[in-house]
Length: 250
Length: 85
Image (cartoon, rainbow over all chains, first blue to last red; front, side, top):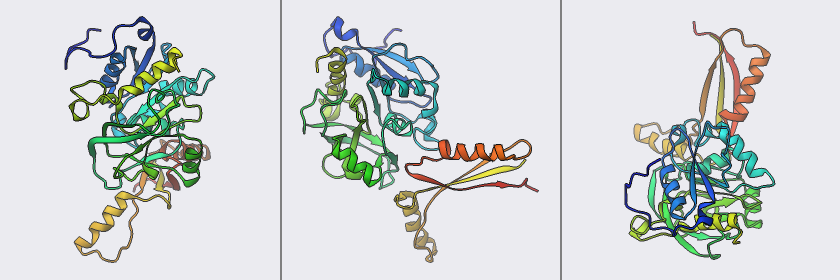
């Protein structure tokens, strides 16, 4: 398809056939909002973005999958509750749990879908202050060994947009203790807790480290001029991380 | 048509921010007798014809797998309600 230049030309990685050989799927559900931004972030990183539709039954041979944010099915029933039964989700769950350990990243509504699909533990309920919150959020990288975080230094602080209403991460104490003990808390909110999430958790990984979910939006912070503070590109690390993973750089 | 009613509530140990907002607003209308509110969901599944044991079992399974999330919610009631007169 022809790319319509909405906000200007790419300022990303130079053309590199090795990077372009990495095919990263971005799933669209009815009500998904951030698929275009996720696709752009993939392309900015130099990889090839592949559009996937929730009703498909094939992953089209992609090397990794991003489930972007939005309000799939209008958040009806529970955020992510209906999307998780989409035909493509069956394939994603299978591939994520297979020996190949397909890297899967869930952002915001994508994170909610991954918890509903039981790829990640816990769940999200309404923010404790009950309001939709949209702001630039500082996160601390707690785990830099996963498929989506290995390009960050441990303990690094990054700023990316946070925008949601059902962002309060909850799980029982046993699950939270296990996540901490196994180093599976990937990101924590720095400063005041924006939504009441247990233990300031902003994002988590599965045991194998190939599946990561978080509420904030790294795909909105990949191009200078458009990210937090109008210069922030802290979100790029997610996409370079998965390229490291796929190309064997780390 | 008979309906199967499914009631889902947040687990007791999970804070209900919506219920908390409601209990805060009630006294403004003079309703001062209520010290807590918890908000749940009620589903009505319409059945064309008789509700057999198998259909009721299907409703229970749907309640556990889709209508509720066992991480945060409990299915507190599944019952058949007769046709509206």
